[in-house]
Image (cartoon, rainbow, N blue to C red; front, side, top):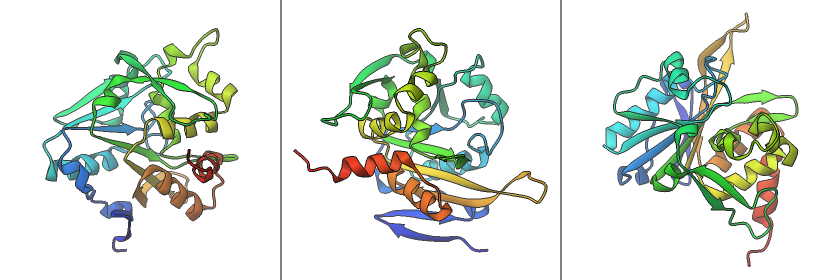
Length: 249
């Protein structure tokens, strides 16, 4: 099967992962720091985490047009360091900086929404504010009642040390507030420029195969495209649509 794709507001949605070649948007050519947020919060391989092949294609595409600093950042609730996790996953890319959310200085960023859905301000790694282009790369993780796509992938950027309070893990704090509301608030607070989603396929014996589709677009649009294509219901996207439909003041 040949590469299939079409242009949506200047960004190409590419299908057929076996022929995926990342075509960087024009903004990347002038960027000095490019941040990539993979889904790599544990050492389990794709499709639980972002595949090495997908990241390699993205980095190669960037290097074809830019000498910018490329930064990979992830947070994990396990005792494993992100550096160890990246080692298990084969993320051994030259000239790429690896950061662990736990090791980054945090800064409080106000939610720009006049009426936040759940969170009025977020603690976030300050490196986000110093990067010129932000990319979220996530496998398509479907679960009962929804899916975790490029916007939900951003939740592990939140430093758990800032949200533990009297409970063990920060993620429990978000579920108490409503994790989809938190993700929607985060989408508006730190707008990522690009979302890339791997939609893998499985063989007859249930093993993952790297022969599915890869979707590329602005995070909201790419999440919506994948949700519609696969018939997935997304509360997070519905909340974003509600906010967008409200009159601007």
